[in-house]
Amino acid sequence: MSSTLERHVVALGGLRVGEGPAVVISDRVSLRERGGRGADAAERLRDGVTLAEPAGAADLPAIAARARGVVIGSAWTRDIPLIRAVAALGLPVVVERRPSATLEEWLGVAAYVAAEGNDQVILCESADLGLMRAAREASGLPVLADLSGNISTSPDPAPGGGAQGVRLGAELSAAAVAAGADGLVVGGSAEERALAEEAVTLVGALLRPEAPGTLADCRQAIDRVDAALATLLERRAELAGIVQRLKPVGGFAGRDPARERALVARMAQRAPELGEARLAPVMNAVIEAGLHLAEERARR
Image (cartoon, rainbow, N blue to C red; front, side, top):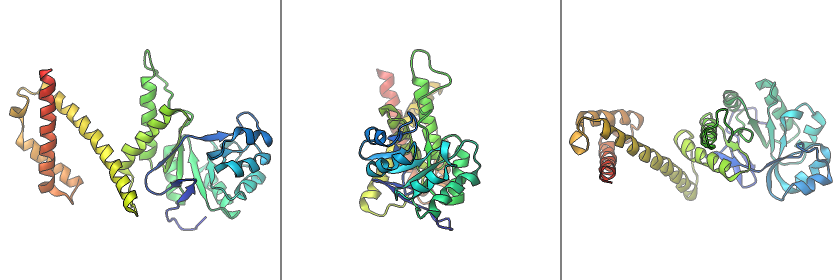
């Protein structure tokens, strides 16, 4: 592991963890869940699985042949012989934090892997988003947020359905990206992956700095920003419709030029390069679009 805190990037199959937008990983297999060993590992791992956690050293040949990365699970971060064997595979290594481990202990396991000659190290945390941020800042290593155990659960299920669970899953994903996660590990269901990808697209576009180096990467970054922009514009239009119902005088007749100028001035503080002169016509178009939509809905 480098002694400096430059931004580390780890190639995990076709993913680049720690560079640009956060990644979403839905295929993490633990061979410890059913106590698999050796030949059983070859049967349970499909070719190209992103992450695999061994139950023991006998699983490592199958993982080396089939997986793109190997996990040092939170339950065995003190198993030094197995950690040494994992590091020797030459695969990217994801180091989970043991629930009781301090930041220093967690980073110590990562340093041990690097000392064995493998600097393709990624950290992974499942509970403490603040600790995840601290680990990123202290080490420079990429950090994954493991939400696979709780992304679609809810302590207060919605009556008659799982809407509350869906909402909670989206909030967890968004919170992890906002905290600086370089990727999300989620359950294997299509719904869970969709929630995580939406959070990466919307929250990541707003909060994660990007420096694309190719035209294709730049266009993908613009697409992510446009997706977030469309979502925000739709939400603004909904709120504008509510405002029209609450105003004594609604519609175009109820426009407040002074408030609109103040709005543009506040936005210019967040977007000084654009400035008020460029933002004013943009916001005028946004406001008018919302008013037209409100009028159309009123006539339905």
